[in-house]
Amino acid sequence: MVWFSRILNDTDQFVSGEYDLGDSSLSLLEVSNALARHDPIEPQDAPSAFRMPQGSKIKASRRDAFLTVGRLVLVSPKLRDVLIDFDMGKNQFFEVPVHHASRLNYPNHFILNVIEKKNSFLPEHSIGYRAGITISFEGDDSVQTFDGKYDSDVPVLSPKATEGVDMWCEAAIWNRIFFSERLKNAVEVEDLGRTSFRFAQSKSQ
Image 1 (cartoon, helix red, strand yellow):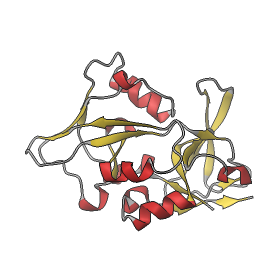
Image 2: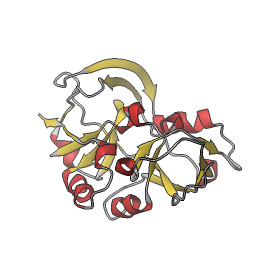
Image 3: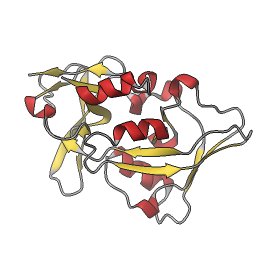
């Protein structure tokens, strides 16, 4: 069984702030575009800090995983420790300090970059998807992408979705993150990020 998250569309619970790029050779737009495309980035090009303005806050129910500017996902150190106990493949975690204008005390978090991809999505059997743009991932051929409707899509995957890494994106769907059942269960047992990930079950063909 495979589960998926709509956190990349979770703009209702968006945490406002801005990133320091430090010595990065990339702009924030270039960084966010790379992460949105699930492309790898070099550690020196990752943001160096996340700064929250007055009035911005991380809700207790979202403290372990939440969406920020540029559609970058931040995860807590506790959640990151759970994730890396599973097969993450080449997925990336970049540690960033979290600074708040009111000096609220938040621990360092990690930018989550899901670069592992599978090709198990079956658009002809899925519900709530419309064709998007055609893109070329690094090292891959061009791929027709699909956008899932907020809160109403049901992706159908082939059996090969259960093979390999425990967290990935589908090459044809860039606004969903997929989880193996064992990883999803571990996150729930640890009571981490459930309302942030808003897990939904996919179907298999």
